[in-house]
Image (cartoon, rainbow, N blue to C red; front, top):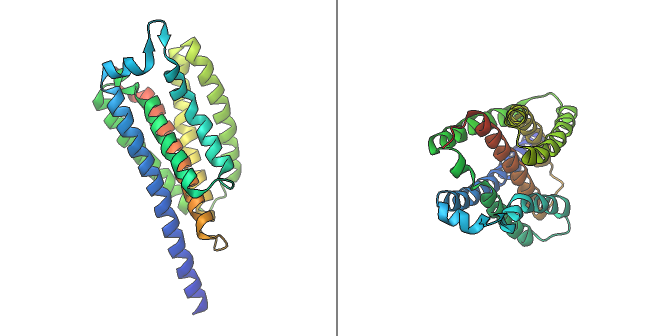
Length: 234
């Protein structure tokens, strides 16, 4: 009877943890999607925000690179930051990500964006379920994928200035593999966190926010990789 009670308690806190994780993820997607659509579907507004007579405005580069800095701050400093401050930074990160995504509405047609979003959602869900249910330890697999991701990130920055379309296509194909694999790895990691009964409620909430942030980043990168492969240009 004691074992059954303990098992039921663990299952309940696991469900509650993942409800929080996905709530944070969906809130971030909602904020980013709203900002991206508002700016990206209004060409005049996009130009006012991001374009100057001599090129891209400072705001463009802030939108491009500040989400990366904020994600590091949130993930590395969450132990020292209050829950309320983390939520503010999380909302700010989501909004800035929306600004950085606004340009896709100028580059790709709406049908391609919608179709790719649903394809990305299906692939993400499938790998999340696989990561949650598999008995195989994905730790080494995740470490390898992170090394590939770092290489992709550096190559992607270089290609921003080189502008090689074929190389961008190759990076997108590799990205689909990397981000789906990392989704499974992170779901397995989050499952271990969720089943821990040793954390207080504040720590659990902070880790749920971090989990939501990580899954959001993986989903967005998977979506963008697929969009570069499948997307029809305007």
